[in-house]
Every structure is written in C-alpha cells, then in structure tokens.
Image (cartoon, rainbow, N blue to C red; front, side, top):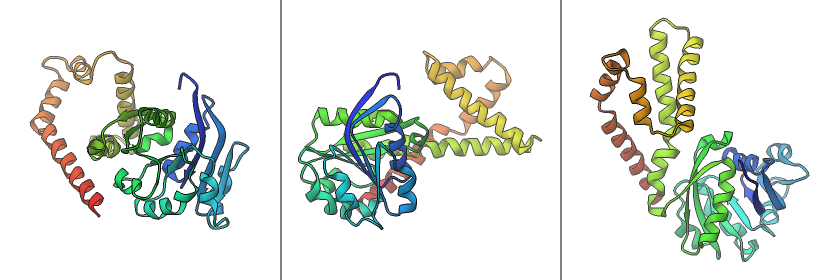
Length: 277
C-alpha cells in the first residue's frame, strides 16, 4: 500500500486461511486500526499465535462467549467461518452487535438476504481469492439493501489491505467468483500442464519449475508494469512467421475462448446450486 489506511475496531470471527490473511493485511505498517483487532478461532492452539499487543485472540473452546466478546464495540465484523456455519454464528452474535456494526461475510453462497434476515444492521458480502494470503488478492464486494456508499467504501478500505477490490451488484458476485475466485486454479492448472510438457522435453522437474513458474510470474509482472493490454504484449512476443506464432496458432485452433466460456458456465451453475442449498 502507498497510503495509510485507517480502520475502526474490527472483529474477525474465524481467523483461518482467509480471516488470517485479512488479519495480516490489517497488521501492515501502512494500516492504522483505531480501537484494536479482535479475532476468534475454535481452538487455543490456533488462537495463541495470533495474540499480541494489538490483537485480542480468543478461542471458543476455552471461552464460550468468545464471539460475543469479540463483536462488542466492533464497528467492522468479518465472518470467516464455513458457509454452513454462518447462519448459526449470526444468530449467536446478533444481539451483541453494535448498532452501527457492519457485518461482512467472506463465505461463498451465503446471500445478503439470508444475513439480513438474522442481523438487524448493515451487511455486505465479500468474495476474496486465495492470493489475498500474500497481499495480492482480488476481492469482489457487494452491499446488502441497507448498505450505504460509505459502508461500501469502508469495506473497500479493509479489503484493499490484501489487494484490489471490485464492487459489483450481488447478482454478479457468483459470476465474479468464476473469474477471480476460481481463476487461481485455472492459472495453476496451466502451470501444471506446461511444466509437464517441459519435463517431456527432457528438463528435470526442478528446471521445469524455474522455466514455467518464472515465466508466468515474469509475464504477470510485465503486464502489471505495462501501459498496454495482454493482446498487445502477446503481439510483441510473436514474431511474424516465427516459432511463437506457430505455437499460438495451435492454441487458437483449440478454441480456448470457448473452453473458458464452458468452464466458467459450469462453475456458475454449481455456484447457483450451492446457493440454493
């Protein structure tokens, strides 16, 4: 981050992989949290390492009121438990929430309507992806019917501590999940397959990893640093009548565009199935 972000007292209920990533982002030197951070986990084993002068970390196995204690006085409440656990957790904390609390769920498939039926105040739905764990995430963010632009802006500030944020209407959040949410798996799959090809050409697995992973990272960084889009960068790599042109022609014959259309359609259909229960 290049500027200082200022956040209010925040509770993270379920500081697992994603909740832990958000916590790490909030602990960045570029972030100021007025009022402190409270986090909960099920076990003391997971809670203890997170405890510090700025983080109150509670375990539900040793403190039955851990979630209630965490949300009292908190203006931002991030719900990081598994989707099936969200309604029960919301029912548990609803009476202890501050009147101005903003509840943000990062659970897939749990709609803001479901949350608003339980929580009396503002709710939002966030869809961060796994690169958030290294501060390079992309988070989709949707506000519930009671959310104001200021609420959305505050939530945006929170998730910008772990990457970029795209605000979308909730009816687009599942579609977003097929791109940025599932997208890392698509990239990893391409890396797997190109690495396999490299090994088939006689390179060791270690050499293949350097060649392929380094190339993907370099290409991504080049794109990020460039003032032109991927199509132009591809053109610059592709010399007329050269080797890359021949290889790209084979990929185009495979109709990757249609393949990605089918893949994202399948993911979207599954997302709707999960949301329907």
